[in-house]
Amino acid sequence: MEVSVAGSAGALRSLLTIPGIHVNYRNATGHTGLMMAVGAGKIGNVEVLLKHPGIDVNIVDLVRVVELTVFGVSSAS
Image 1 (tube, rainbow, N blue to C red):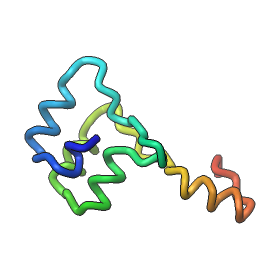
Image 2 (image 1 turned 30 degrees about the vertical axis):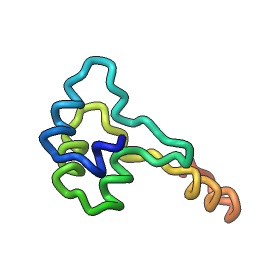
Image 3 (image 1 turned 90 degrees about the vertical axis):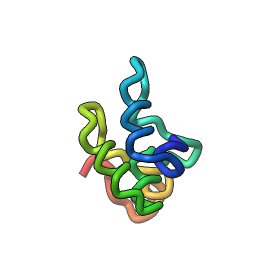
Image 4 (image 1 turned 180 degrees about the horizontal axis):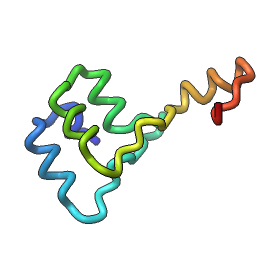
């Protein structure tokens, strides 16, 4: 996850070749590497992550889940 923000696109690409790597891993606040790379403006890393076949672009972090709950919106919609 750290490499999505602090590492290069090449390092991230190499890491994603490791068998069993969890590309959608979420930290304690529900952020994924993709969310963190987007937030840090790491465009190259975002592109690498988006090309990974296992990436889930629909994951919502815990802040968004709380917002949806407070406003009565179903996260399924």
